[in-house]
Amino acid sequence: MSFQKLNGFNDVSFIGLKNYKRLFNVHYYKAIWNSLRYTFWTIFVLVPLPLLLAVLLNNKLTIGKTFFRSVFFLPALTSVIVAGMFFRYAFGSQDATFMNAILGKFGIPARKWLMEANTGMLALVVLCTWRWLGVNIVYFLSGLQNISPELYESAEIDGANAVQKLFYITLPSLRPVTTYVITISVYGGLSMFAESFSFWTARSPEDIGLTLVGYIYSAGFTNNDLGLASAIGVTLIILIMAITAAQLFMTGFFKKEQ
Image 1 (cartoon, rainbow, N blue to C red):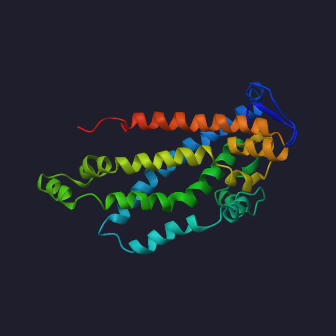
Image 2 (cartoon, rainbow, N blue to C red):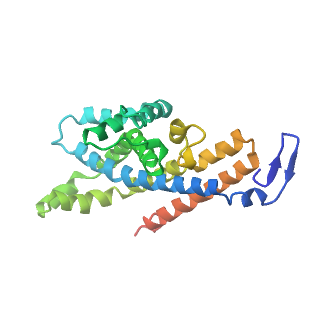
Image 3 (cartoon, one colour):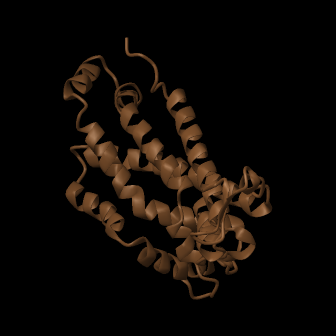
């Protein structure tokens, strides 16, 4: 379909690479930039933070572990549209909104969070972190509970402290889980759409919320340009595969076990 022009089900013509040549425009560049930025920041937050919290929740000295596990996981059960509406109001431009009220406590002027590129991206990352933090904690907890206690006991006998056990036992043992979390985060980041749509619907000021999937939606459903939408989709698949392959290569996924 990406090589075709469609004017209806019975009017389809082959146009070669013309749909791909049309991708050289500012909207496509902006969509790629926003998708890559969002993916980077969600991985930057949603790998180390849930890992740290999982280690704390796995500690036998932590009180209320079951309660905190439930609290962290509950947002994942919430509809992204409902959560998006809440965060949309929280990041609203009025002085009385949640975020501007916090700024007001410190004497900082109110901001138009969803009208600026950086603060808009911050709102997206905060929403993503709120929803998926608990899920990633579950992944890391499952990995932690598969580490043999004998490794820690042996390390304690050798005089290892908590930090040394974290860096020499816990983190290396969690490498498969970490690789998996990063892999699904790459896919989730580059395919993000619902969060952006819940903030800005179909159009955002100066495309600050436009993502690759959002551009597919705009081209295919708003403008009824299915050929261009298919071309964007093909490049999105290639981008996800390329980044995932590079990430797996860098983490040693393709190395043969000794």
